[in-house]
Image 1 (cartoon, rainbow, N blue to C red):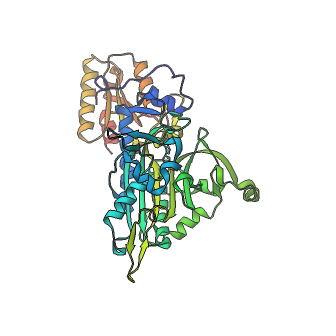
Image 2: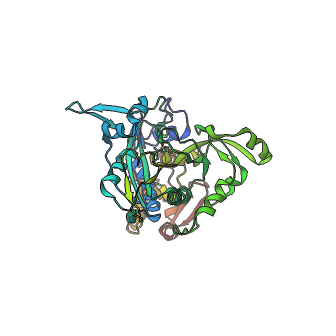
Image 3: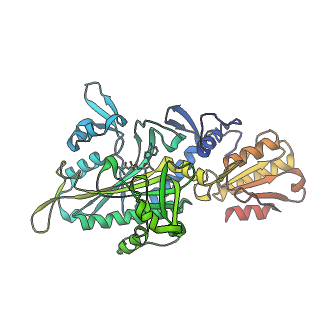
Length: 437
Ligand code: 5CA
């Protein structure tokens, strides 16, 4: 992509409404624009990151055996009357009337919807277990939308739902999601710590939140120091194996969100206790038959009986993750994207647009990298070098290739790592092969 043609409305000034780094940087880097309180448009740079995160979430859901569907954003109120949540949900629910004066709502979550689908389509224990997920926009009329897309009113969520014969089987599904979440967040470069959590309006008595520790997080959390050291990213996982011991190795250590903190247990931990703030990036629930009973989502059993299925739901804040990643990876100059979610891998800076040597070399690099499948953002704008450096640091691409007339005389360019700030002078060919690796 050529920057001269790219829609990248960066801001020089820090927007006054933004209180935390990720919000500030997303606005400054031209990733999002506010439409109204807690509602945002995603511009090209932001949209690319959002889609990369979504793709990783999808890969990990598919890998654990969940199947992707897509349910609507607008739901009939009658669905929610079945579970009793139409009245229980309160002012966070955006209620709408259609032209026939029927009560509708913009979905804050989809337990009712998916349970109805299951009820209509599945009859036998032989069809279990089932895990379905979708990635869809949600609306919650939050009292205090803030921190940009971190606590939005409209936000993108991955929500998955499991259906099992009984509690024991349900626990197996819960464990699969538990472990797959550790992997998903690790792949995104994040250390998300699972913590015992309140189940709130979703319900049930087994629930964990996954929290990324950050000073700007909204939750007060506490956990055993050992949990900070657990590492995951490369461990292959056999989802058919018994995952209970693995899950236990995490849940045996004390870790709790605000509502679940326990003064006595914390005192006993002594120096091993860590208290911090955290960003909730995922939340999983097992609630048994809370929805399957009212929806009569029953299956026949092997002995000819009938039972209501045991269910769980599993959320990841896909849009919130963009903010969480920025909170974890930035400095005073801007964002520092982990390579897996970076909107482009390389930023190519032409220091002297109009100079034959510079233009020629940059076109060559741009074409070669693009052909090799490397995503490049080529700054071919005719502006001062200082402005180019500042913009490139702000948008945080992992690598910068800086090409100027002096170096090119000897066939050399500068390769800069955004994360370390290290610059090295290398040949054009070496830069190309390094980036195409
Ligand atoms: N139905 C369940 C699980 S599928 C559910 O709705 N869970 S939730 O309420 O905990 O939301 C799941 C995830 O969505 C949260 O962990 C959080 O990462 C994200 N999320 C929730 N509210 C917001 C919000 N207002 N803005 C951005 N992300 C949010």
